Length: 265
Image 1: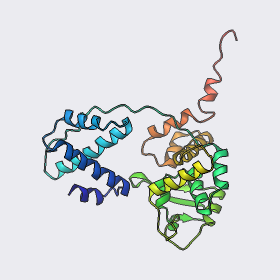
Image 2 (image 1 turned 180 degrees about the vertical axis):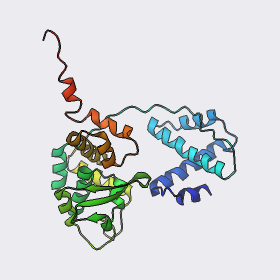
Image 3 (image 1 turned 90 degrees about the horizontal axis):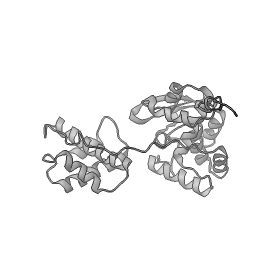
Image 4 (image 1 turned 90 degrees about the vertical axis):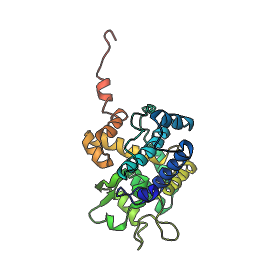
């Protein structure tokens, strides 16, 4: 029943998320036995036994928490042992935007469809899942706008550059989705990520698919110097997610630090 709940959730989880969530809960129940008799310490012990990194541990516990929220709504239990679980702290990593020279090398060696993907990610900040969902009805070539459905079904409209419009025009086809396989079917977000990362490695770009989005974010912040604008461009739910780009954007913090002199020098 829980699996059906996840698959039919109004939140419309990606296929990969559904698979991961259901598999994690099944492993959890197999390990703990009766899930409604466990304590907080049991959840922590189970998550610790997985011997995975902080981010993966947090994801694992979030899958189990979703199970308990569903169980409470269904009247199967009145308690959630994941509340109060001590989660490992996440290391604070700064974004590492892809270099323009690396993107240029990748574009030079890509097929028209791959070039369009690279353009949408590095020049408009689309995630892999957003590229996979993009339909031709979402693209207005005359106005130069793209209607993007992001995480949590948060929609945004982006004005794109003439270069991105040319890249999209080069792959114009009668299918519903913009990016499709040889059978005319849309790719999954996971497959988009694989295709892009494989090409970036083959072209010697030295970056990943997500670093293309980092490049868009840092360039956007350098251009407008307004975090709220960049937040909206990226489709972030919170400006806290956007703030880290200020630390790697040339001119934002640099102009402050360069102004601090040292007495006697």
